[in-house]
Length: 192
Image (cartoon, rainbow, N blue to C red; front, side, top):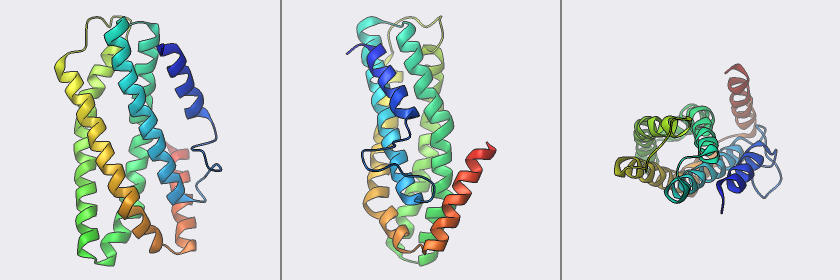
């Protein structure tokens, strides 16, 4: 598949008001919004994988530079908001519950956030290079390893959140608290 087609489809999907196959969700459904963000993470990681495959097959070109900018945009802008949503609204709720297993899960997820941020800084430097007109040459082993480590970190992180942490937090969130959570999430995005 050519980069143009998958990069264009990615941009269309990311700008669409539909975040996943179910009815569109908004900040009035904060846990559903968090899960929809995970789908966007998966699509961005898939784009990264296709970008690497394209550069391997065709080298750096206009299409690969555009795809690199798309991956940068998502993980520079949207992903930090998502992590902050979890840190502000999900993790404290579970820590307050006092369940030792959930507290351990939250600590692992906090550690994941720090590790993913460090991995992103390494991968981001590669993507910045790939997004410029001067990009040339094959992808080195270090960049491949960074991309794979970044993807793997998100895979495990999302699995734990969707399988255990989000359901536990949702069960501990009253409707009025969910409304306030969604309103804060939306307001923070309007500010920055």
